[in-house]
Length: 78
Image (cartoon, rainbow, N blue to C red):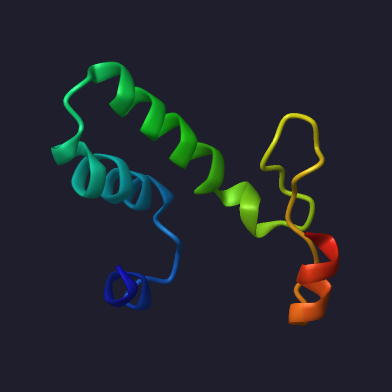
């Protein structure tokens, strides 16, 4: 995946979601509802919004992206 990302100028979110849900997990998941759940979870975390400060990981707004910073900044947020 790193090699793939290093060769593109834009982040291919659809491809990353496909690789995560269908390729990495899809072959091991036998229930169609489980694969739908995996796709929904990945779509929540792998999308263009996460690259913006304040991009949400939850409907409540509690969990969101923060300004890039030091490890201490991230630990304080967590």
